[in-house]
Length: 251
Image (tube, rainbow, N blue to C red):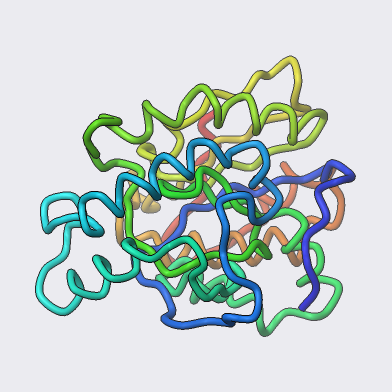
């Protein structure tokens, strides 16, 4: 499906959350390292600190990871062996509702290429990854409190803000993130082009919440199929139609 190339700054960026559900396994031919992917060099230090601490705590416990029984056993095993782990590109690793409805595999070649060069995922473990970046199996929420780091969104804030502002310089950014992920950075509006923080509300005006995840995936798909240039971002957001939800541009 190709791979993202952020050496030339993308003119349109779509920010998405990861999913708690993740595909297992992956290719062991190219093992994961903290410096992997588009943002690896910039965020290697922070990733390494998290990886080392997860090894010390044997992958984490039920309180940190938010799962139990078989799910906890899998998460602990994955988190304990991140360095050198098998990889999948982010768009294949993440399997939650948003990503299922985005369904990159069914897009045309041109649309997939646009998606891979536009979508950036904000992650509790990785900080940021492009849709094409290699990602190991893991479990660590951005909203977690992980000693000695504290609340991860706060801990990530400064290095992640610096990295994203440099990478997104001059770009139009469409933010489809939940608040806990959005809290992990601040974009400099003097550096980027435009910034649209987007939510999905019920037609009654009520916030969509968890029920809007499928619509968020369809909205992201709509953007990568219809928004062929960054100048069409606002029009593309306004042209999205869903039987239950409507786009709310918060700023």
